[in-house]
Image (cartoon, rainbow, N blue to C red; front, side, top):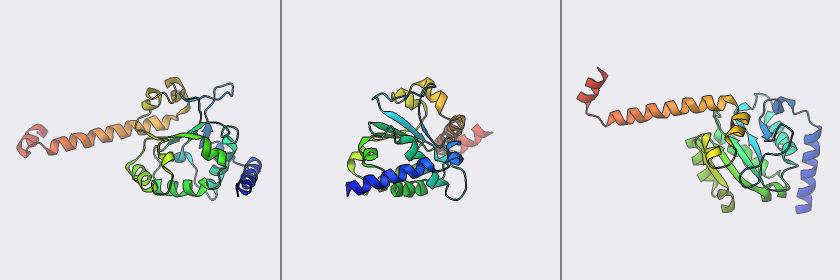
Length: 209
């Protein structure tokens, strides 16, 4: 069975190499993080890093299949050893769809992809993402969940040693920082409102007046 899977994977890679993926490649949906000279940038454990940003996926028929082929093409040279997936969820509003797509695509990956995946870091995980991850715990092996990490703020990537601050600033799109600013502002407003609800009405009226 493994031989058949390997042959199927090789055909998938061949198709990916022959396909025109510029529609998603130019958007930066899937990127292996490298230095300017093309050499790989590793995390604190020496793993290569592939960054996936679903919010950049353009609208259109067949684009998600192209995203998968792009992932295959970009990772075929790094999946033979340890690698990390840096999943940037910022501003993506369809986590249920993404979970379904990932499960469906996972069956088409090579054994090396599954064996050598050392970590998955989700940047800006929404509540929906966390709930879906809990729900998927019944489907995926426990070993996978030991690899899963959340980063509620971009700065956690360099504080946790995933990437240096300089690299994060260079490779993470500016829109992610804008999203985070709005997220922080929204959380602060919710916090202030929660605090105000605990204040007696007359004191709230005095404060607001």
